[in-house]
Image (cartoon, rainbow, N blue to C red):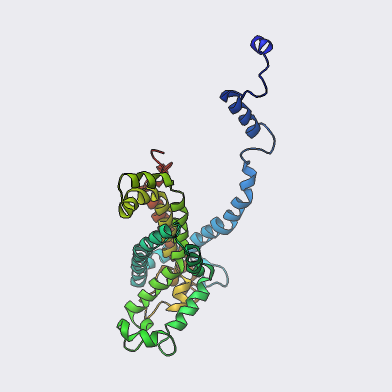
Length: 324
């Protein structure tokens, strides 16, 4: 108090010391009502939405997995019968295998393309903005509308595949009538739709990389390829993990494209787990068994997501700008 009372006033043109500026900023952020970090009440609408439209349905589906119910009347308790049937059902085993294969191929096919396109779109090339806008158009369409368009194009009688099918090894143009052709069509159509989304994610990540890193590498004589592998890829590792989690969970829950494009066929060659769940629940009206399949799908998708976050070290990452 004595120091403050005897301190001479600071001239108007003299800047304040750093510790006084920090103290002033801190009071303005947390000391005034309505300024600073929002309270927990701001998260209440989102939390209630998540509880009513995500947690509650999952709990009900988990309970229905132990019952026999056709959608009318009162479900009857059957204990573990649905789970025993699921364990012994070869069609379920095939659906799980096809879902895993589709997920792996989706990641292998989409990630390199989306990464390269995203890095390219983050540059300053001529006409880049126009080409990027055209390329992102599939992202604006619904899955149902896009699947209907591709189903028309792949029609062996009237579609484009009737003309180019022989060149692809399908003499009659019936791509969706063969096992490998139908599975490849699902893989291609989903990639065509979702690669723009992941490209957009990689574009944002690439634009956040400081330009000074590339300038320093260029001074040291590093070319474009060396800069990509030594700067771009390491700096995008958080982005790669984020995109991979979205891609893997999305691939495990593909449904509408399979429903419209192949209906799980030919036979059961494209019947993945979500379509198997739909067929048991809303075609056979065996909602108890469909709930068991849905519960397995939720558990597997959640486990895979947590493993990806855990094994890649994403949870421990704080910044990719080491040395900055």
